[in-house]
Length: 195
Image (cartoon, rainbow, N blue to C red; front, side):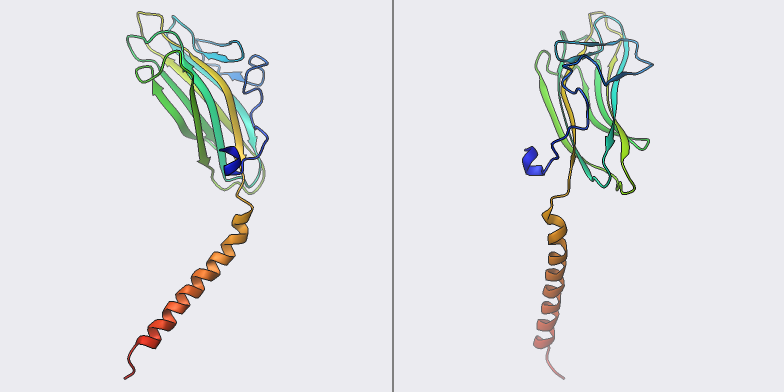
């Protein structure tokens, strides 16, 4: 799929496979349930306490990029709670938040890794590189049983360039449309009766 979209090879995220623990990632200051390294994964949230875990990484979007391909794998951990917990994934750019994923533990597949992939359009970035953030949040509610966590892995963000042929095709398609319109007008004039 990546080659079809013309995705650049360089991942804009560092350590998205968590092979180096949580290096390159930030645990939000208001996090009260924790984020721990797993075995090549990140464990966002923890069993038992209620609260919120915020986990993110800032990255640079190169100038003039119009789209991002965002991928990650996640799995709900352990057991479904009596009251739903929530998992959110977001892209934050220029003070605006684009919700990538919002899922409750009632909908989640426990113990099964689920892949997320999406291409997201960006506002025009023409003056230079821009900083963005990919953020993951677990919101654990009041539960009598152990609660949940999210096991996160394979996070990648790639800039999707405009296909090289598009700038070449655009003028040709415009000329073809103009010519076709003119040809249609010529036929209309030729068919019209003369008074």
